[in-house]
Every structure is written in C-alpha cells, then in structure tokens.
Length: 184
Image (cartoon, rainbow, N blue to C red; front, side, top):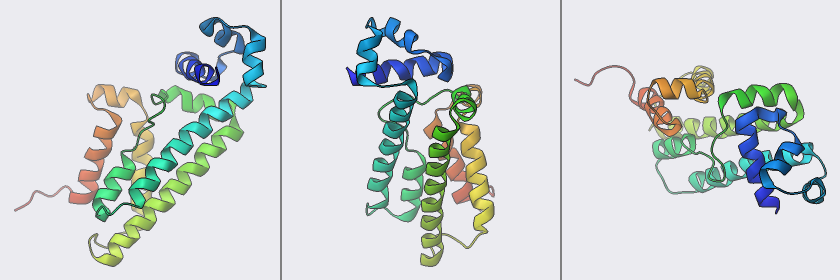
C-alpha cells in the first residue's frame, strides 16, 4: 500500500505540484483517509519519503559509477546522465513549488546537489592531476555545470530542442570536454 500511495503522490505532484491534498490521493487511489494515514502520518512525511527515495536512488547509481573502473571522462559522463530509476523526473515548476512550500525538504535537495557537485569536482581534479583533463578554473567549470543543469530541468528547453535530459547533458559534456574549436 505504501508504494501505491507514493506512486500516486508522485503523479499528483507532477499534475498539481505540491499543492495536492491528501483527499486528492484518496480519490486517485479509491481508499479511505484512514488507510492513507495508516501508512503516512502526514503529507510532510509522504513528501519527505518521496524525496529520500529519489535522492537515495541517485546516490546508489552514483556510487556504482564512482566505484567503477571507467576512465575519468566516462565517469564524468555517466555521473551527470543519471536519472531517477524509481520515478519520472518532476516537471520544472515542481522545483519552484518545493522551494516555496517545503523549504526544509528543498534544503535536502540543495545539500544533495552540493554534495554531488563536490564529488564531480573531485573527479575533475583527479583528471587534472592525472593529466587526462587540462587544468582549468574549477570555479568557472562548477558554475557552468550548475547553471546548465538547472536549465536542463526546464522541460520547455528540452521540448524546444527535441532532447531528453540525458541527451542535453551529453551535448553539454561534449562541449566541455572537446571545446568549440573544430579539429584540424
């Protein structure tokens, strides 16, 4: 039952944002409120659980990438193209809604994103030390990646460019890794 509720809640979030109600869930699932509250004591607990599932999914996938024997450039690409295996990605407006409606939960996401960027920076530094990546200003690279990844969350951008999120990340990495200059 918990999994059904979580799945339905994710559907509601993508439909209504975080403004969905527990009544919306009971209607979607055709269950009573008491059945819902037997599984989750509050909407806050439900949202926290969903975010924990998503973040843990990302962490587990990243752990496999970072612990693999892949070359650094392939690790970079693999880590940045990870998408949720448990749920379809949220629509862009959902992130704004999360920030304003559930700032404590957004902080979990923000902390995860910083943790993720720190790991990525460490990987880039390893590549620079090994000589597989040329020395660059890490602050600029971090900002480029952060800003671009934020823009890639926009489904409008992806739709206008007929791309999926992983496609857009691969294109970004191609520019970062290979630059803009044509090869002679």
